[in-house]
Image (cartoon, rainbow, N blue to C red; front, side, top):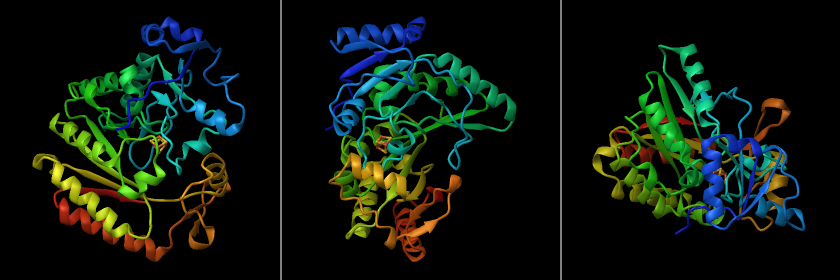
Length: 342
Ligand code: SF4
């Protein structure tokens, strides 16, 4: 069982101490005996330890920066929600394919924002703009928020905040099984709790540092029992030698462990593996021994934004993936819905 994340090093912005959560975290980390340093800005943490890039990257991924979120303009978050709600940035997981490696570039450390009330106020404005339409907020666009929430409880507050809202809904996805503190949150059914699931092979070889398959399934069952609407993102769908059987076993296990009532309003999102050329370079640098196959010749090129295209699977492979996984969804969870395949 992967243990709940404990940072090895903590940086705090002086301004963060003006907020109750900032002070609370400082006290907590002091009591835990973790080294605390000061940083003027969470955007520019200098003097991170480590003798080379490889070491620096690993140390950064176990470093937590406690800061104040200045930009309260939310990014859009298609196709799963209207907006991304910023509660944290970065992740302690080591998934080889993770997009954060390129989007966060030189700042792989984890940032948590203590001005949660201000973030909620901003969310309120976005909801007002769209009311009476509902507005969905995605809390895991730039981090695996569940993975650090046992320390901060900001996600828990967000769940309860949207639980009381009239027009807002919250959703997030995680690869971590440390969900116990979220089970008694007053969600009022307005938060969709999603788990990122995959064939055991993918979790084992490509997702180090995250909770293992059986632990995630167990956590999903607990979350279902706590009455949350549940969802699964199967991502990245990855074609390895025995993928059909690997994914079948995944569905079989899910069906076996989930309570029946949780399967009525269950959602699936399917995302095939893709990579860009810059991402491939970063992945090979950070995880030189990776088993992740990234052969441009075998893939289909898809034009992308800002001139950076991505390599997805060939058309016929995509069809097969859709058919095989779609087939499992129908077979094992006939009452669920497939939100998208991309
Ligand atoms: S758990 Fe998610 S955010 Fe964290 S490293 Fe893995 S893919 Fe990235």
